[in-house]
Amino acid sequence: MTQEPGDGYGTAESGDGSGYGTAESAAAAPPRETAGPEPVWRSLPQSMLTLRRLLLVVWMVPLAVAAGLLLGLLVGPVWAAFAALPLALLLWGWPLLGRNWRSWRYAERADDLLIQRGVLWREETVVPYGRMQLVEVESGPLQRKFGLASLQLHTAAAATDATIPGLDPREAERLRDRLTELGEARSAGL
Image 1 (cartoon, helix red, strand yellow):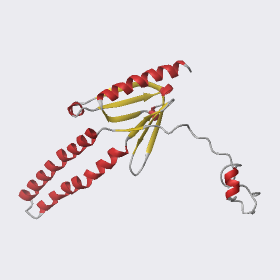
Image 2 (spheres, helix red, strand yellow; image 1 turned 45 degrees about the vertical axis):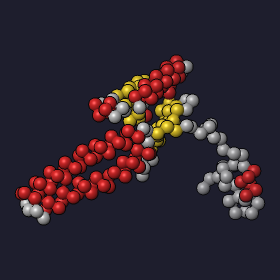
Image 3 (cartoon, helix red, strand yellow; image 1 turned 135 degrees about the vertical axis):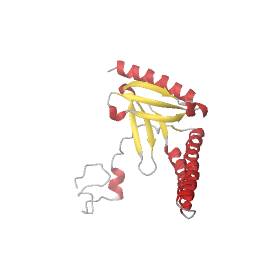
């Protein structure tokens, strides 16, 4: 393992010869650079969770009823018990949707937009303002009914395209205008 001066591990000359350093050598090491102040994170509105849970119920309950009726009539009443599987998926998916909803957040920084999501596999996307080519606000019929809109960011590299689902429409429009303005300012400075 190669050690760099000031990496917090110390050096072989740290005093005890172990190569791991001591508290004194770690305290003497220069501090690492930080990226600046901590960003202010914003989460998605509660109505996004309500919409997703409603969709879960709309799909699973009719599926359970249809499976129970079809299996009960065609195969036998004992097989109708398999209709409980969609209901079990409903009970399992309900808290998972809540965890997923809480994992989505975004933050505006001086030079870029941060988007975090994911429960088991955390994913953070950093979208530089100067790379933004197109910012769209979309809202389907169900999203409009629940007062939601999605923000789609298209960049110069397709790998950094990003979406923020379920924003309040006013916030989505504000963010679109701000990101477009910052993107134009940053790209003009290149």
